[in-house]
Length: 531
Image (cartoon, rainbow, N blue to C red):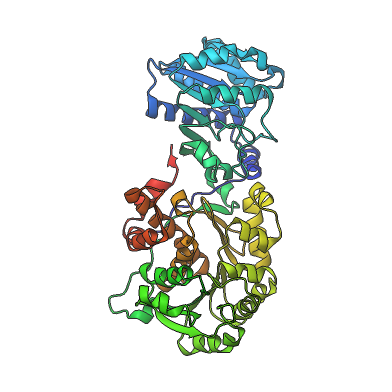
């Protein structure tokens, strides 16, 4: 059975879908607003109850506020005590929001206005009075930093100590990046419409959402066909055949390590085996091999000639290429812990350019290819690159802040330019394809932010290729998912602070087992709840 496709929209795509629903399919915008407000009402009803509950609804003057006012009307009809505060200049209210305000006034729901920072008394009182708040101040129309009465209102909401349900996206979170524009509503739950927005699923926006719900409204599904960002859904691996041997499940070569860098070669070569791979070889400087071998006897070692600094010498190039052919290596990793030694950096570039099998480039290997991207662009076999933000910045020439402003767009352009699959590591890692597709991974936790964690990821991606994900993008995606899931299993047992790469390694078999046997468990834990 195919995994569910959960699309993720940019604000521009969300606006297009909204417009085309009306223009192409005749879906009344008022109907969509009614759907949206009803979904918010339903989340409040399920989570907090309605009859007798005191609910403050904080609405802006745009359509996000209109959705909140629909929720207010539905809550009032269900027996809740509702007070509505409209924040902003009423003269700038959209037509749809104006209709909802008029309905509220007709049915007798108390409505107060906060036009400026000096008129926030009613909001303060409503927040003190209520048991739960619904906030729809600013949605997709956020432009720049939140200021003035809107900032003051959000600060009051955040200081009230009451659970908050946000409308579409927490007000103040940039829907295209997840960045907080000065201040944002800290929510217990967020109900997003049609599909999650990028800002709903990337940090820090994801943190501000609380529990994320999604309502499809009355959008025709075909409107989402052109959306090329999705959540990284679990795809169970092929059956592990009973009569398989070590070569059946992948023959891996890691070119890694240098004097004083013993962890990277260990983690990358051993994680391949722990995640299900069959045959792991480690090519490392000959002085490093005894130390790694003493810790990990399951790996087969290839001692390499060294530079004066104890790094891999350029003279090893032909031997490494011959080894790949001789032993039928079907995937390689190049760069973890290889150092910034100039001779070794040159070896990495030439090796990446000449290898005719899929290659994962990580760590110091990314620094090497950043100086000559043609080493990747000209490859005929697939390339997977696994940078963190600073390495990605080095690779693309973009400043880290520029990447954070447009993470999806930056990744998409880099994948196309390099003709590579790129896993941009971070909280909710992004996996990009050369054809423009981007997947948002939902597993993982901050306890994994430790030296060595990325090396475990590299070996895990290689293992996914070995156990049967022959599509390199799918191998990268499932490697990222399994790695994050293993980290989460370790954190559940140990607490986030003390999680080490060894703990993640130890949980890889359990994580692969869940992916294989219980993918629904991953969906239930990490994906938005449909409402």
